[in-house]
Length: 454
Image 1 (cartoon, rainbow, N blue to C red):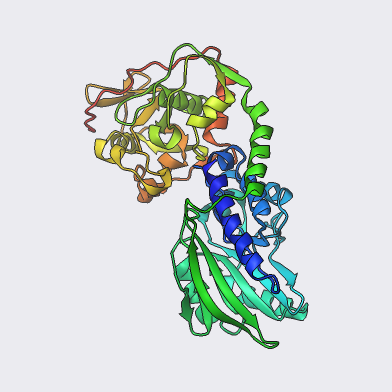
Image 2: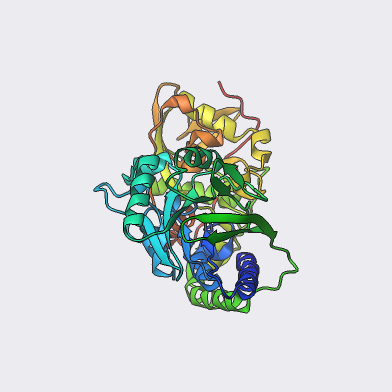
């Protein structure tokens, strides 16, 4: 309930501001990334619950971020829009035919009585959008100019940009678009700008991260120009009372998912332990599931990115699996030479790397890389009982966490071309494996350190 409590406190602040300003419009915008997989309700619903909560808060429009789309595919945006009471704005990403992604709009026009306010939504470009989904990224600056002109032709008195592109990009946009937009409300880089930042006549705002602050901008429309009179951020303190309306919606969502989560999805012969400093049963099980799903020679899985706890012996409820497997990583496959495979595994078994706690893992240690179809014996890597051949090509199953160079296991100069099973995520792949393997166990003894690559 942590996420719902955070939003409920933001809702309380929004309600207070509206009560203090009954004679003027008060708008609340979300700048993306509300879909945080480390939050239980968001994780269980692939982000949809967060948009139901934002609707309860009173959100007027949201910029589409990169919290859900890269993991669950563009189709998830339609699901988010279907449970929202506000428009989801995304202009820069389009379907292959140039149309907007179902569920989103490039712009919105709000009638505020004394004026009409135009909104444009833009988001950060990611290689996966083109590589895996075939989406098109349109040139940002000319597009914003074109859309701002269209909004004004439709009656907009002023145009605001809802940006999920990060502070550095927003500075460039402000420099180029000072004649086109009055204000840039920013996200993605999670900077905290207590009074905003001016670039010429354009104010850029950001309110940090984790829902710790609510950004507030006071504006005046004088009939010709939209002017900023004050920009600040309000702390969302633990002492701020939660909004009963938002908590009630969270309880409704919890009740809706409880029956689904209570289903038995498999049976385990024994308790499968979890550890980040040694081999463990849950990571072995997932490596097995990925190798079979892909039909690969070897399966690899870094424990800490996939799991946060053990799985008990006996009948396994879906809720139990989902509670300890929050990862949004997608199953995938690559082809590696034997030399590359050895290098990948060596990094995966490096204790210093395993102990690291990168921010995307919310403070958890990476853990060791686990293997399926392969063993480490006497400091060497064996596949199907045979020493790895340096020039031989091996089909390797894993996830984007093991395969994307950003995580430090694969080299960018290997020029890999992973294929990912999007929008499937790890726990869904494991659930499919459990459906055809009853009961299951995951024997230990696959890793024997130290590993000494040849």
